[in-house]
Length: 116
Picture 1 (cartoon, rainbow, N blue to C red):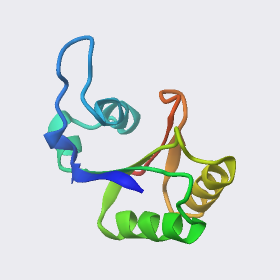
Picture 2: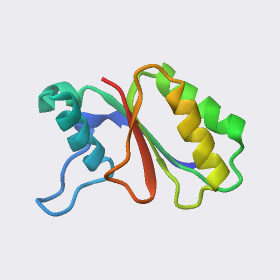
Picture 3: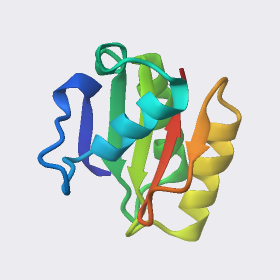
């Protein structure tokens, strides 16, 4: 894995009306999905990582568990270089995690999961 981020969502700022900083779409979608104020969502934590083809399935499980244990409300993976097997295991493992739901409509090269 590379380019790992872990931050409060409040540190993610929209850069203009037409462009959004990294994770900005997740921040907006989170607020819309859970009907919370910007200040409430700003305190929630976001985790993200870029998956590489040589990442093992166990390393994916470990990073997901670490992100959940750290209190992440949004977990996002860039899957542009990921294999189908890796993507399958990420989705399957996240389905087993309490309260996480996949947001599938916004991202072409990412998978994103949220919980309240």
